[in-house]
Amino acid sequence: METIILAVVIAVVVLGALGGLIVGTRRRKSLPPPPPKAPDITAPPAEPHVGEEAETPRDEPRRTIEEVDLPGGPPVAVEEPPVPAVEAPEIEIPEPTAGRLVRLRTRLSRSQNALGKGLLTLLSREHLDDDTWEEIEDTLLTADVGVQPTQELVEGLRERVKVLGTRTPEELRGLLREELLKLVGTDVDRTVKTEPADRRPGIVMVVGVNGTGKTTTTGKLARVLVADGRTVVLGAADTFRAAAADQLQTWGERVGAYTVRGPEAGDPASVAFDAVKEGKEMGVDVVLIDTAGRLHTKTGLMDELGKVKRVVEKHAPLDEVLLVLDATTGQNGLVQARVFAEVVDITGIVLTKLDGTAKGGIVVAVQRELGVPVKLIGLGEGADDLAPFEPEAFVDALIGD
Image (cartoon, rainbow, N blue to C red; front, side, top):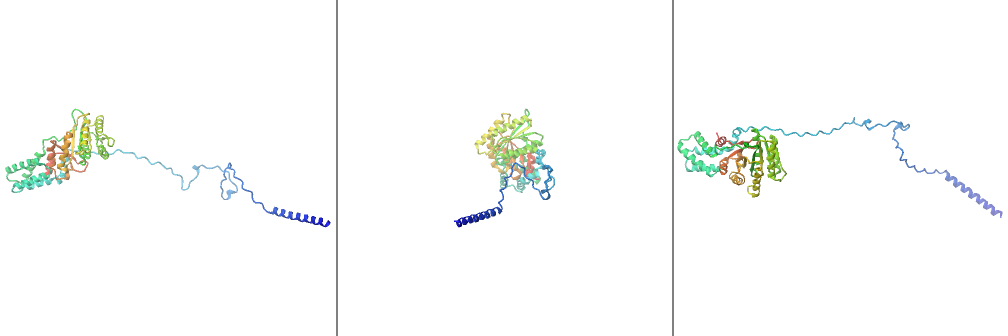
């Protein structure tokens, strides 16, 4: 019995010793570090420091952004670029019109005197037989003089040559000059009517087929009038071509003429009406109305041209209706002229591109066809190459020196 009790006591002692050893071992092990505390979001963030400043943080006042020196020197103030001022276009002083055709005679004679030289060569032959006179007729017809004027000229020349007998070059030139002047006409009033006696402004409408230089001619005519001391308002009634109104306005700005425009594809008659109204209110001397380039085969468009004329005449009657024809079109230009004459009363003709053809006889033919005079001719692309038509200077250029 005692032996059993002793064994139990020994077992208890051994178990206790083992338990103490295990507990002591656990206590000697290092505990894991506690988890980091969550930052206090209300506290200001710590400022980073370098070197010695980390030991003793300084309590310094903060500098403003203006006091901090940025890299690269002091800040440069950026200025807004100035808005460029819109300058008014410089007003040009057009070349005086007096004697302008005489000054351009050399240019005209270079391309036109083929007619005069051809006629003088034929007339200088020793024997002027029927074949020679037929050649003279062919030369005149080729120059677009027209059948009836050609017959008149040949008959006059034959009669005078027969009477003259001996023919020197100077006598032939004088003879031909006199006969051509008869055809062209020297007793016709070729003044562009822009100064009605009882009112202002004078009203001029410019008509013609597309491609004849109608809008350009209107702009050049404005220069002619300004050169003669007149004030001008331009009416851009060609509303079917946006470029036409821009082009006309540019011509006007160059000489200080105001341009009345309308919306693209708007009513041309309305623009023409407003142009005359503006001209009256501004007290200008002349209103020039550029119309759309009507195709003579389009009946509706031609009717509209008649409407423009009627609407304008609610203000006052037209003083001039100028038909612009391309001299290079020859007899085809006469067909156009007939149709326009039926729609509006043509009072004068402007022949453009006359320096680019040897067919100067169109001057005679178109006057005979319409019964109205050529009043202006265009001799080139220059701004001042539109000249009043002077029969003597023109014939002298035809036959040469």
